[in-house]
Image 1: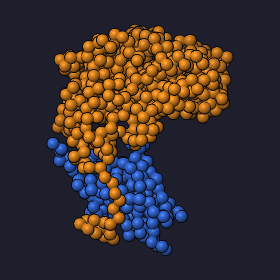
Image 2: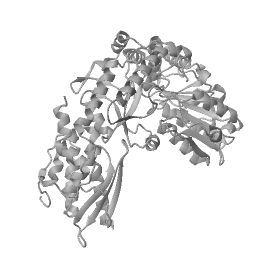
Image 3: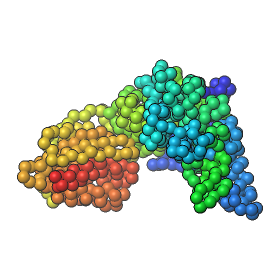
Image 4: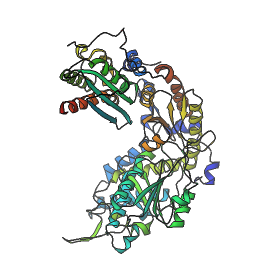
Length: 453
Length: 150
């Protein structure tokens, strides 16, 4: 839906191309529990190619110094490399350089927006920022499938301002129920915040529909791109969103760096969230004036080597080609979901057979807890995510407490998916058939321990 | 194809207790109740203590909840172990269990104190599973403190 036409015709990566890619990721040739690592947890965090590790190391060994301050040679070099990294990110998502704000991660990006609006709601930022002020009667709209990071900041913003938080419900298949969108997005709606791709369901949400409706009522659109930016070409201008966030570590980059995209006109009207050094023009003992975006939102010493590492990650992804990565992962996602569905007792959440999904699948094995499934797979060197994946309301809605999630990336092979499927097929036999009945009598064969010391 | 380590973690007694737990299901008349959640996985337990009237002896532990095989077996083994024991004695056993679970496999469990629950010691080698094993015992510790305060 959000993929460009070129993505639908891109060829998946060939087996030999994937093997060549894997050579760039040292961790992928390690063993875990005496088995070759099968890393199927890239949705949580991706592995890093040498190019990223080298970029950080090279910077630290040859250019490291404080950016945007100091007049010495290294300071100028570091500033240039740091700003080039920003330009790389901007180009990657089709934004302008000054529309890219470095954050620690996507969570901080979402909190930045929420707190800037919160500050505007108590009058900070002056007349320009009034457009962001929320008050009782205003509405914020999210969806039922949001990661906690795109839910709790809005809950808190609503609680601080008196605004009402509403959500778009999902159907049993995990798709947004948009039949009442015109009522959910109405004249009172100020913010529409939703995920591009669900980290649990793998479903790609119809950004265009939501943006069109938000535009019709003048609401701002916040896109959680954590699970899209790493996996297919993201064009924030074409999507026409006001804000987008994603994390570096999910897209081959380092931890500790994330990106907030905001339309320049909006960022420059918003009051800051974190305040302090490097984000001001004039400071007196009473007050301060702030730099334009992006520096306005980058208080304190920045994550410089991490930003440079993220730019190297983007260069790596671009060299492979986002369209081909998307085609590869789409095929893997289908293989994963179809294979899991074929295993007795396994329920796959999200899009059904033949429906679009990214390269991940979350599933429940009847009667067996996800921690036990994950432990069993780990014994074979297979790394998956277990639990609620920071989406408790979504799990509750779908009637499961926790699930197991396998998530692929550009370095994932067909063989690895086969290993996962074979492992899941063996889980039930190991743990035994699901049955629960309370036992009120202590089993006779077990020794009496009562009262012993 | 499963390793000795995995079979050591999921001993048959653990799987049996997980499938057919002891003390499962809440009943009327508890002196105290504790509800605990493992935030990393959403597992929950509600555990209640029933006392023999006029004493500090726990006549029965009743519990409900959902979770992995380790957490469910642990609750069952705990209930099985402590029914009929006075509360201070139960606290001693909880302390002993916690010490074992925090030991990364370096402390051998004392079977005189922990009975069949010694089979859970294997979980202490898996840092991510210690909380699963501790859930019921933490609930019991809380329930005992509530019972004492009552």
